[in-house]
Image (tube, rainbow, N blue to C red; front, side):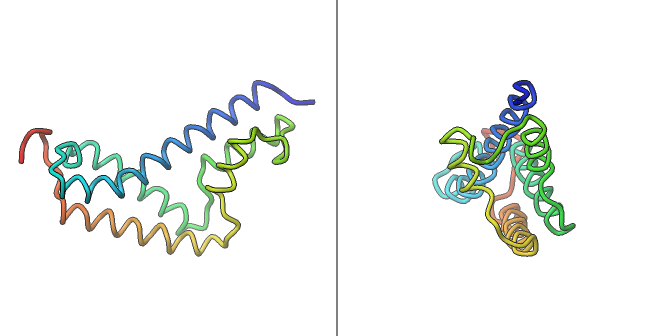
Length: 135
């Protein structure tokens, strides 16, 4: 029997996770592109700090050999609700297969560390500023 409340909680965590992934990927593209095109928001300090911290957290978890805590929470809640991977809604199943690759954790650690180093390099190449309007 499926527990609807646990299933809903799992789905909320899944979609929050997707939003965070989209934010991280967006920043990886928008920061260098925005610097080139003169977009002021790519230099906002709090936005850049949020992006850097999110990616460093992902890299740290991978280096420590841990899956993302959002992945663990979502999976645990889904299993406790009685959900199986075959009963996922179509879009969620597709996104799950796109986001969660069956690779060893060390592959993710190398990948996320490279991305974290890229984001750190962007701080030097596209330095953040306190104000949106300062150039």
